[in-house]
Image 1 (cartoon, rainbow, N blue to C red):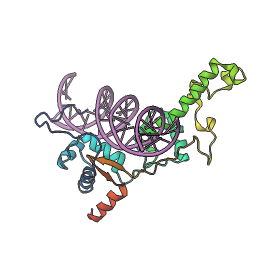
Image 2: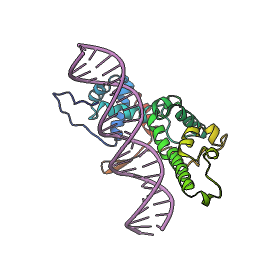
Image 3: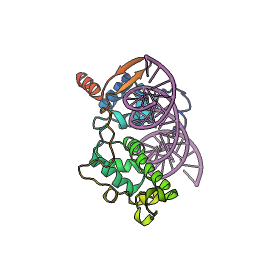
Image 4: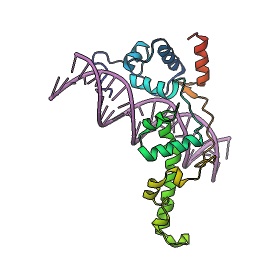
Length: 205
DNA sequence: AAAGCGCCCAACCGCCGGGGC
DNA sequence: GGCCCCGGCGGTTGGGCGCTT
């Protein structure tokens, strides 16, 4: 992708965190013109960003229907079921979780669930190398979820986790549904999506 | 109080497949 | 058929933040 910015004009391209101004420009532009071709959109809106970057920003953060933070136990369960079925097909999984993005699910998986699986695997390997320490013989048939392979095969929440109204994993106290905090080139800027959308409303968009 | 460390997530990168010319 | 451009996807990373020591 991004094969080369259209030969003729080597425009400077901004990278890194989006500023509130950029967010507003993008939101305004899409509100007025729709999504269209992202590279054109970036140019037409006057954003010094790649189309790809605009698309990502919109889909993962700015879309009005995007939900962030506070993944519920039900969602966690669903993620695990779907991941057991499809593997790392994040976008496919995300389609079954309204308002969730593939990026968020991927991050969630890697930071929470994956970590948990790794712990299980570690426990298993220490168990295998020191079975006596654990008071009984290592029997893979008895430890479906403790062997890395067995765990991966059988981590379907139905078989491996106790669920219901219970958290499948100790869900860390989620950070606030993130009031967005951005360090905007030397002057700190704090805003939330609510702020941005209410500004939109004020602008009559 | 401050230094160190780990967690989390936004954003980037690279690859791939599809569509148009 | 080959090239170019684009969107989409999964993997990776950099930096902010909070907790611990």
